[in-house]
Image (cartoon, rainbow, N blue to C red):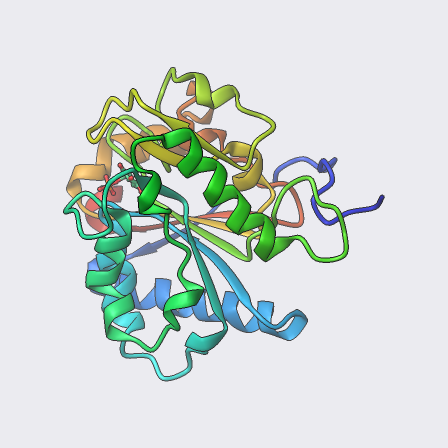
Length: 254
Ligand SMILES: O=C1O[C@H](COP(=O)(O)O)[C@@H](O)[C@H](O)[C@H]1O
């Protein structure tokens, strides 16, 4: 069956880099980019399907977006690019980070924010499976699909080049089948997490990395200048007509 998620055949186009003078300008540029993605998605379909990371991203994302008037919040369908397997009110929760900086400040219907099932925290495999089922229910209509196609996935990058919860040298870098995977040996605490897999990232319409501040300088240069080094972030190769973008600021690009 021809399907939206069939294995892509075209090569990945090179990433597009957007650079801004400072974090405030970066937040504004990112908000405009997200809104353009929203508008394009809503021309074709009834919802804007987005995956969001935790870490430093929610603050940059929320800063300008919460004041924009042209956001169709009721049309957003949000998943997490990765999530720590902790209660939703735990300080390590990626949901909580996004709630603090974005969700609690705007009228997104709570049912459109897909969170992990916290009744299963003792069993990360079940957490991942249940999260994948939420995604299947959202993406699978009348067509069978191999992988979901997010309108936009917003990613961070760690100092070791990890993105989502895909860490250098980890066996999940080779996961080619599932949509959502779990790990119990994350080198960065907390050790138990779930994450989107590379095939899901690579099927997105757009993937945007956000790297702001001096602390990202070294790894950003490595990611942009040495894609062959095999960092997890460099393994995100969205196939045409999808596109990878990098949003950065002067401090990170120096
Ligand atoms: O552990 C994680 O780290 C990455 C990068 O975080 P940052 O604070 O260095 O920006 C993040 O994108 C991911 O969602 C998170 O779980």
